[in-house]
Amino acid sequence: MNDNVQENPYLLLTPGPLSTSATVRQAMMRDWCTWDDDYNVGVVENIRRQLVAMASSTPGYTSVLMQGSGTASVEATIGSVIPGNGHLLVISNGVYGDRVAEIAQYLKIPCTVMACGEVGYPDATSMTAMLQEQPEITHVAMVHCETTTGMLNPLAEIAAVIKQFGKTFIVDAMSSFGGIAIDMGVLNIDFLVSSANKCIQGVPGFGFVIAREQALIECAGRARSLSLDLYSQWRCMEDHHGKWRFTSPTHTVRAFAQALQELQDEGGVEARHQRYKESQSLLVKSLEELGFRTLLPQALQSPFITSFYSPEHPEYSFKEFYTRLKARGFVIYPGKVSNADCFRIGNIGEVYPDDIRRLVSAVADSMYWL
Ligand SMILES: *Cc1c(COP(=O)(O)O)cnc(C)c1O
Image (tube, rainbow, N blue to C red; front, side, top):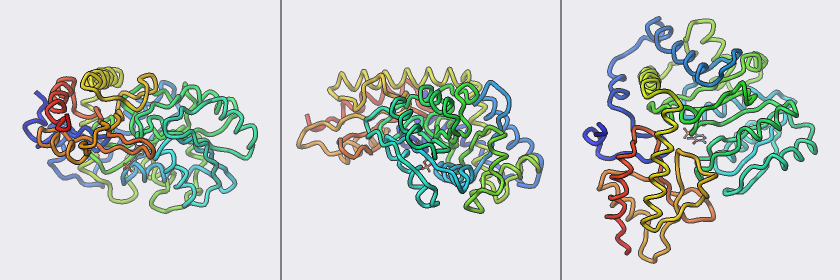
């Protein structure tokens, strides 16, 4: 039985923060000194090494941890990587892609958006045309799993074009890293951004960036913000064995170390991917049997979060449906697509196919509009 059922009033079926294991939460029950090797060498350096090992089968990569929510790590990357004479192309099909472009706008970084539409699939041919028409583009950013809809974007196809044109590739893999294999060396990804509270199943409080070391070294002095200077944060961690420049979220970091251990114990990224896939297909199949329809065809769907159309019934309200599910032990997520009325259900975190089965009967009991 999922231990969350005893310890929490409800299971979070959200894209993060998500339901964590009791052992991850227990890992926070002691204090740490940010100057001491027990923390820096024993915890932080181990995490940095494990992240690099997960992200690439070839050498030449390094990692940096950054305080704040995932967006802070995206902002640190955009603000520290693109030089003064650079130009960013953002491939966007949702809120998180748009957010990367908004960060560029705040930082006054020249930026072009390839807007695919929220249910549009980024297409390598249009991107090739764009790179040919705009040779001033130096960097390309794309979200891997667009959490707005749950779409898994075509990383390998896009990566191949970027490699052909020799551009720097930045990937927001926030909601996918740890839940699906990504090999930065093979895909030619220069910077990959993710955070503690998504597929690695830690608690919120920091994000991380895995970078091609040579590309990161070139970022010295480029940052547009002191606290979000990715290069300086990395330099400090390198020179002082895992020391963060400013107060680090020690308890969160220790919980993350435990979460990484549990990912290994589960069998690594591939085993976790299989669990997510099993939960997600079970979820879709069962809710379709109850009459729900998904926003995306299954071929474009990630195994992390799924958008379902709201029932077209005059008595249906998300709030009422949500409240009834919550009373039965499950918290779901509102929709985020602008032109379709949807709700979302995530299945990442300490959530198993058995929990999905219990959810399905809770959904059946909560369809008060029928
Ligand atoms: C969760 C998420 C983020 C970061 O969100 P925060 O609320 O800042 O942690 C960024 N991109 C994607 C695709 C996400 O799913």
